[in-house]
Length: 147
Image (tube, rainbow, N blue to C red):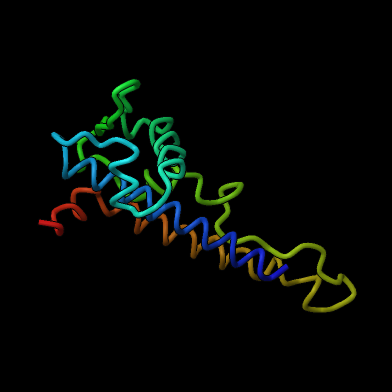
C-alpha cells in the first residue's frame, strides 16, 4: 500500500513539472513548431505523455493546439499564466485535496478517533500556503531566467 502511494505522488509531481516545461518551451519558442514530438524531445519522454498533458492545458485554456500540422501556442501571455493555473490545469490533486487522510483509523484508540480532526486543519493550511505561493509566480518569471 505504501509503495502505491509513493508512486502516485511521484506521478503527480512529474505531471506538474512536465506541464511547466511544456508551457515554458512554447513561451520561449513562439516561432518554432512546438509539436508533441518536438516538446517530447525537450522533456525527454514519450510524445503520448506530452499530448495527454497538452490536452489538459488546452482544456484549461492555457494553450492552443493546431490540428493536422501540429504545434502549440499560448492562449495568454506568460505574464498572465501562474504556476497555480498550471497546477490546477493538470489535475495534480484528487478532490481538491493535496493531503488525504488514511481510511478507517481505529475509533477505539484515542489517536485514531481524533487524528483526522486534529490534522485536517494543518493540512488545509499547508495546501492553502502552497497554492498562494504558486499564484504569486508567473510563467514569465521562470522563462526570464532561461535567457
